[in-house]
Image (cartoon, rainbow, N blue to C red; front, side):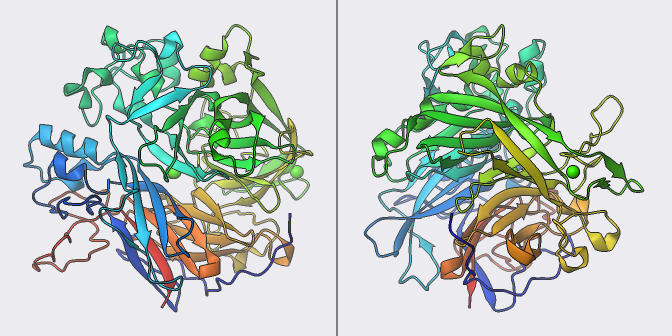
Length: 596
Ligand code: FEO
Ligand code: CA
Ligand code: CA
Ligand code: CA
């Protein structure tokens, strides 16, 4: 818990960018370039991206679509010249990826191959140069819909997860809806299966189907037309959807390893998960369920972290206790002209408890077995009375202070008829711009009690929104809306990427630095903005090297193949012939921003 030094990454904040601008905007003195783009070839002999001649076979060997969580880990012993990049591919936008004339079957096949995960090696000449990816490198790997994941923890082997293809209930093909994630202290990657329900057609009548948003409607991508396991009305695949909605763990340094799905962390729309080692040695993982009025969870491992024992540490997320958060405020909040609220005592704050769902391998929820709690976690949580949150996205502990930050992105339904209204922890009705919760555990990180306060209530003060930045003058912050992903720099500043600002404050989404300590606490400074209709995600802050990475997801998402709204990142001019491997269409990409 060292003090906060000054970061080497100094910059002049950019002005807010209008939402329709189709450009990457970075601070003066910085430049940007892609590290890897949708369609870039990963393996030796893989074809270059060819927008007009896409095939599933090519896509399986290329970088997937809509990269979200991203991290870059140096390969030991390479003097900082070699690294692995991990990215997940949350979903696809078929209407801008493929010409209308492409046969539906081909769209499904290419789109499916653009899902999953990617590990790819990077290299650079020296620490001051930007990274390039290495086609054909030994650690390169694509995880596709037929990649097998091992289910761990108490739900593994349960009747609730058995299917026609897997009568043992232990091996699951594919991962879906991967959104945010985290990197563990032992160098593996976690990725959250979020909106998996959109891939299944289901009876939609049971309490479980309803609580998880599974309906009897043809899915948007219609994969059920090719593979019956995506139709859980088929008696052979009744439980197939129970095999998604977990935290996935991947070892990016072993391309032959079997990735895991950890049932101990519960099943819901996991935005992601982030791990911290408690003083007691247990590891603690935090995870949000990104749904309006859903919950915030915490996992505490049964075993203890052993420095340097990677094999042991990779078992830690397989067994432990699971909790769900209940927040209590200490003052009423008053609404100001429908523009937001202020708390009577000047700060949004209070206390909280972690309510147990699973303790010592046993269910803590009346009437539910431990398997049921971990497969139908939302229903278990409903029974113990946790706090309904405004869409908890990334939840990330600071390794400098142990404080935990929760990005509540927005909640258009708060306060609507029949819905819970504003409270001190979720203080806005029809919450358009979101807020950030700061949690301080009482004692060790494994504690079941905490205090909390809001670090910020987002919005654009210059447009009259009632905002709160921990007391920092509101006329001296960059406006910010819809916080989604969180990261920390090497000295403990919080960085926030946003998703939804165009519909909130009417500005492009971007990446923001937030000072947490000292007189500058609450100061928000915008570092970059992403192109038209793009979301900023997967921020990586290598401030000691003065380099920042982000995933640019779904640029130009509201266009069509024939009427594109973005040309990021190749920006091929109209009428020009694209260079080899380039395309005149938006390509979700990992971007590096550096001095130069
Ligand atoms: Fe895929 Fe919760 O954002
Ligand atoms: Ca997200
Ligand atoms: Ca208060
Ligand atoms: Ca989001």
